[in-house]
Length: 95
Image (cartoon, one colour):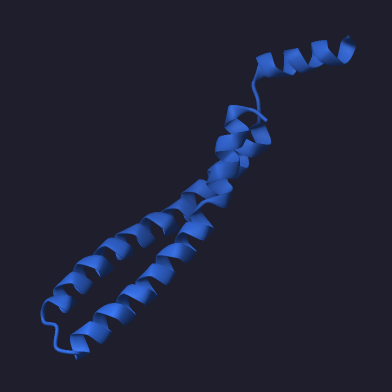
């Protein structure tokens, strides 16, 4: 597998699990922060807002990774190696 194919495979696989982890983190953070806020923690809402902003930005990056990265990954995976790799494979097959 060439370097381009490895990058392409990474661009195809990584964005969706990243989005799932971000959404789970968002849910857990909201649950914890609002449970603490209900108990009287005034600073919990500020921390929760910062965490939600960070996870929202990370979610936007994950969506962009899906929209942009998946087609680019498919192209890199389909194109594969370069001419030098093809020549090396031809030499190995002939011998």
